[in-house]
Image (cartoon, rainbow, N blue to C red; front, side, top):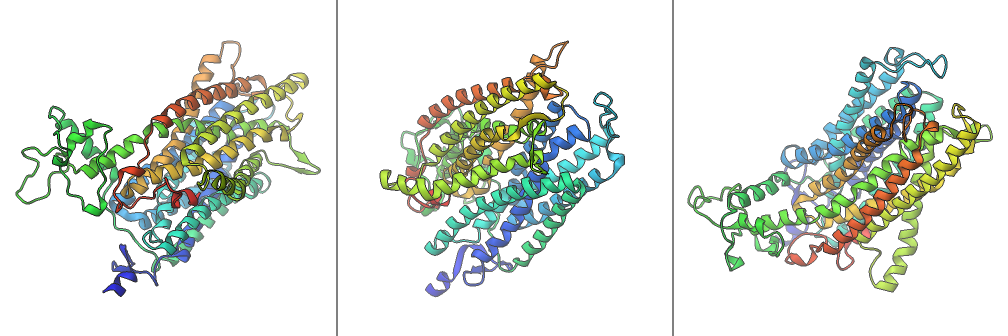
Length: 580
């Protein structure tokens, strides 16, 4: 019997629904097959996002602010739909089927976008002069939107499940596999950066020099190939059974607490309902006492004698504590949104800035969208310095393997604020040159490398905040809510893009006048983009102050669980700290 237990994974099954054999399923090979999907997803999504604004302004002749909002709305929707993907994976499909279905949807959407950019009937005629450009009509924009949002649906559906399904291939109870999972998380972010690097260099170059339809077609084919490779591991994967949506569980706690809002909590907390196995229980905490009322046993909670209680009337203490843990992380969650609003400027207005500047190196002209290569380079350099220099020094000095997740989030927020300040200064210089030579000049006599500081600072900030957020949400959320916690993290990206769209709309409306177009003019040479960047820097400072208050208020969850609770503890340098 002991031998049988040691060679099977307790909470996973194989392709046939039998307990997963450790020697025949899971491990690095199946996990590596999952990474191919992630590389192709980043290649497609980022390859479209970083250069879409030049297509919208240059080919479809849309205003700069309108183009920026189309890009940020597309990216925001992509990340928001991660919640849908997570819900379907947890409640109905499982992660394997969710990845396969939505990866195919994204590939089809990318193929449709290739067709849209190929057909001349789906774009307006070229401009005869600078003042005789015809914008794309409603039909042309409608077809483009359909293609973009099919891609967004595919991206959102698969993104929340890829990392989770990869970690499903490792058993946390086995020390050797636990170490391999830490390595997988590290390489997972590396592959995200690799896909982005290929997107902003090779793919953007193909879009500008060969043709957008060819570049998008290559993305579509690459995703189909990745799906076929993904299917090759079907019999080697480990599968976790769907246990229901954690969103539903949280709503059950809230509804039960509201129904019993007029009841008094018992003096003895042990009188509250608890049916969770001893090894998996979460100890009661003193915050959010209102939610504790969901665990008060009242008449009618048990509909049949001996049956389980109605979960919409009575919840266990552990289920209540899981809901508390999710509520507890919301203030930190809210204060990270502004970073992704800053990030949105790097793939919209910063690319527009680059398109007006001198980008030649000898006879080679750098595509405007490829300036984001400095952004990706900053991420990779920062990760290398942090991994090889900062972590060892910090461990010697403080005895901890690197900064805590909240510290990394704070560092990311500070760097992004400095990035917006640098962007404002660079734009003031660019505008002064534009004023001197004339705003209608297509290429200003100013090197594009002036923009490197803003790309580098925000990129370094992402290296800290991305790993810090992912670590924070996974380790501070209940074990059974891993997919939801990943989706919650990705919603900060989504809301950051939507906040960017909202700010652009408000600033354009407030600063626009009858005689001018305000800060965000159709031609950025006649606007005050530097003031918009300055506004974001000020919002970044205010947000950081709020973040500090929330960080001081926050009580980590590490001390609130019994030893049997399967959560990565971040207090003593565990997996969660090492994986990033």
